[in-house]
Length: 66
Image (cartoon, rainbow, N blue to C red; front, side):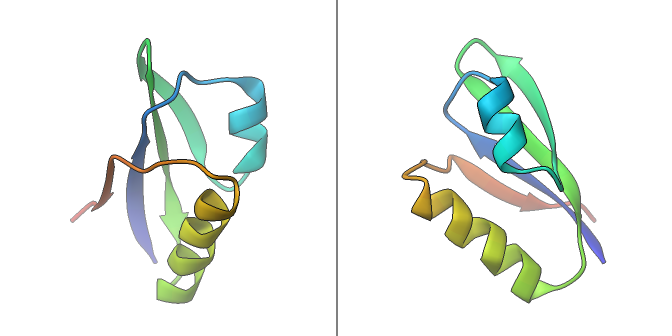
């Protein structure tokens, strides 16, 4: 299990947070949301990234915490 941060170029909203219940959505600026959470493996990470893409959302950055 590893902790990930995914930065999105959107203001945090309840709709955005609800779309990713396994992650914590934190607004870090007026137009940036940070999704943080623990994912069990690469398959779970890829599933999350595909869900983001399926929703037509852009990704600024993906980071794995050491």
